[in-house]
Image 1 (cartoon, rainbow over the protein chains, first blue to last red):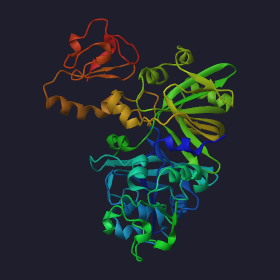
Image 2: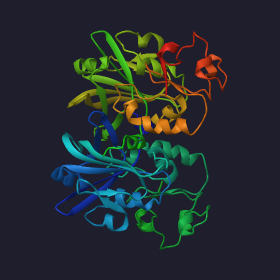
Image 3: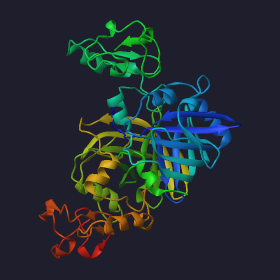
Image 4: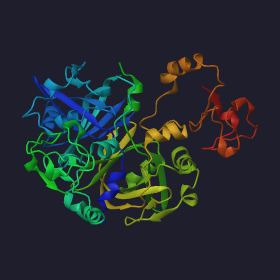
Length: 237
Length: 237
């Protein structure tokens, strides 16, 4: 028996992974980045084949990994995590530099950055595991790291469908039912595009929605603070 | 240029990884464990070839991964992280169960456990990256997870030599010199066996050493709280 809740106990950070091939820049937000060896220094990332960036890395054989800081404007995760490079220019809105390898390295809201040459590529079914040798790395600030745990708790987001850690909502449904029967508060609503959860207890301060506002009372033109989807894209949880 | 301090910004948990082959149980503590795909659920671990457990996994083609909880008796990390299965019976002292795959699964101080069949093995030089399909997983408690960050900060330990995240002390020396010249406190001493740092400001409460005790004033029979090495094994940092 596999208990999917056990997967939530694994610890991750949150990273922006970028690459470029023949002038086409690309990037996404991912939680799997880790050191494989120390001599030489190598990093591994797990990249969904459906990510546009995956194909770019396969062709360019290089990637950058920037480490997000704990306190940030969550729209950077919305832009990199829930929008495709095909439809949206992520590099117009967020600060980056062109690294030693000639690829974009995001510096906006990041505390460290690595540039890697791909030395191995492992087909893992839905994902490709890229192993990269670090050719350049830099500490950008002393801010604390954004952990995946903090991101879940604080920014109320679920993993996007392409993430290794994505879990079908149905598999977690029983828990949620329990939650609903044990309190009478107005329901939370989840954005079906990006997974942002609107919590009526907290409201949406940035959008001028005070705590205690039920989803039903939100203005008709309310949009998801992460991916800007309209109210119709939300469903009750 | 590679700035090794940038590697400290990556987030990890702390895991006990075990296996068994022909009656020989083996296990170690490692910080690299992460999900690669969700359908099917697969986990990757980076295992030093010098770890006795590495050879056992190569032969048995299976491993268990148990997730350590935040508050624990640090001797479990000392036993699994800094002692070899060849010299010390880790399974006599710490509670485990025999899992579905017939291998030991540590339950002592752990909040979740996975059992995996190796489906791929990638030679990465000093380490082997094992990719395992999860055949069984279980949530054991609701205690919070031990992150690698918390472990470093709270338990004052460095990575053992076999860890992917190990950094030669020389590479970090400049920082430490700075620290020493900017204050006049008694020096910290590091255990050369396991990397535990004795901090005179904190003392060693468990051993009855009050805060403010310089290393020089410790009793002659003082031993490292992690690996039990004597005073002679410590050096000034």
